[in-house]
Length: 434
Image: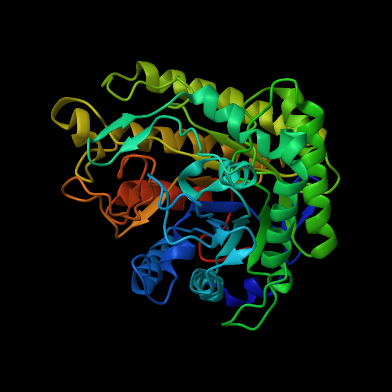
């Protein structure tokens, strides 16, 4: 671990990330639970677990965690499949205990040589997100898409397209745009200029933070290219004016082709390009197939995706990071059905997929066309519940998904070795953050 690395900011120089005049390659983990786990008390607080998780991640060569600095509550009471307690209980109203959990997390990271990418909003409802802003502005119920029913142990719910149309109103509906954006911009100001109650450092002055992320996975709007481009530009400009020290990324998946990639990243205030790759969600992978057929197809599509995103980011002369990728455990044979979510299920396909991802990204790192990758997601010592329950388990899987779906546990030693080896593949020294 290198505490001195956390005293400096990560910057962008052309297509590279740089820390202390050395190329910085992200070997990251998604750890969205951090803010809530960092609370001093309450149903989600578990600081002892966080310290154990961060220690294990550090041993695995992790130098960046991607975390939330946003979660929003409903005016209609507690909602299904969402994380609680929330940071913003109502527009511009905050739970200071949750904020203090974020303070504590950021104060711990330097001792482990870990930076943070901090997300300021979420397209998806598991944290409230953009749909909750629309709900506040229109005083209407969110039309939830299909989500995991933790009691029925199955995916249930509504129409996905209806949900998209509703949530896109956050940045596309002129009748409520001023309202939703006023609240969001106030949230940006509140977070970026917050003084950490542990370190007494403003977030905007804290080199522990690597980058600000506008939103986790903003979705493309059919016919709304100019609206999206304007929203990204205006939001990133505000952050840059408030905080010239940190990188800014849109949080986009970059899954909709070159033109949408440009829309999501061309703003001069976006300094870091993002992309995500999900073979199961995108229909490439069949989790119940024990052969390598769909796995190999997924890997081939991943290679295309990485090469395309490397080329597109290079054309913008900006660094790019694969901020999310994941795969569930083997879901066949004796681990068919719900048993595929068990920590005891093998990870044969997952490990092969992880290895392929890291090799593909490392190849692009050598060409200075990529700046790293972050797996989704770290569960550490947490395990799924043994019986149906509405209680949040705080595994690596958000509450709208089955616990154990994409989680990497502390017991997954082969997976963690593959993650650690990325530092070697990309010519990093896993004992340092440079």
